[in-house]
Image: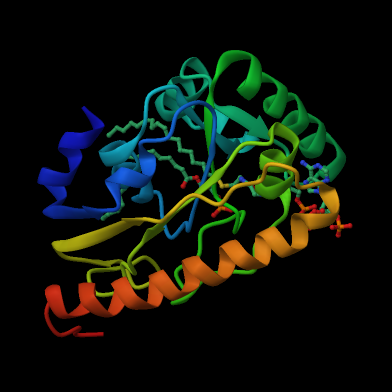
Length: 207
Ligand SMILES: CCCCC/C=C\C/C=C\CCCCCCCC(=O)SCCNC(=O)CCNC(=O)[C@H](O)C(C)(C)COP(=O)(O)OP(=O)(O)OC[C@H]1O[C@@H](n2cnc3c(N)ncnc32)[C@H](O)[C@@H]1OP(=O)(O)O
Ligand SMILES: CCCCCCCC/C=C\CCCCCCCC(=O)OC[C@@H](O)COP(=O)(O)O
């Protein structure tokens, strides 16, 4: 049902790199996070046995919260780092025990400022603890068709680029910063590349 919302909003998705999702077993997906609209893109490509990490406040978001709760979304309290770390460590164990994939937004919040925010570390600790690969996914900039603060929205095409997996086998907590920096680097380059293509595809911006 959620996938049909794109027709109502006049959105199209172009996905590349499908082959990188053909990975057996558990993995951690990381992606940039611009808006609630990201949920529509997630539904375009969501692999089997994949759930998400979300802020705990979403539980109280009416129907959406109930769907998230029933859907097994893992809620964290971003104000309490120790609690969030504990929840994510448990999630790493569950990933392995139940062969689950987890989708994390490493920026930790929505960002429409034309780039990527510095990454938080949780996704990378999670992947290292589970010794599971990371699959980075990048959404092109929405700024040519959607500006949240200005309340402007028109139809548009969103490019989703699935990048090659990054292995974590043999890595430890000491490698997390380098892993995060590596992931940020490839995602930032891809974001700039696909956002300029999407801008041409969506026509000249009026903003
Ligand atoms: C039309 C009808 C439609 C109906 C549709 C209905 C439903 C749709 C269905 C589904 C939709 C669901 C969509 C859900 C999307 C939800 C999106 C979000 O909520 S994004 C926000 C929440 N997510 C995150 O915040 C994840 C990213 N954050 C982190 O990973 C953070 O690291 C953190 C764990 C929250 C901690 O935050 P902090 O600010 O303290 O960050 P630091 O990264 O600086 O970490 C501090 C310190 O701790 C170390 N650390 C971090 N994590 C761990 C860990 N797991 N284990 C061990 N240590 C950890 C980190 O290294 C730092 O230490 P140091 O500085 O020494 O390195
Ligand atoms: C005119 C277009 C407006 C956009 C319409 C969006 C339509 C999307 C359709 C269905 C999706 C509904 C599910 C909403 C899930 C919300 C997830 C979300 O975005 O949570 C916010 C959280 O990550 C970070 O919070 P903060 O940025 O720190 O606070």
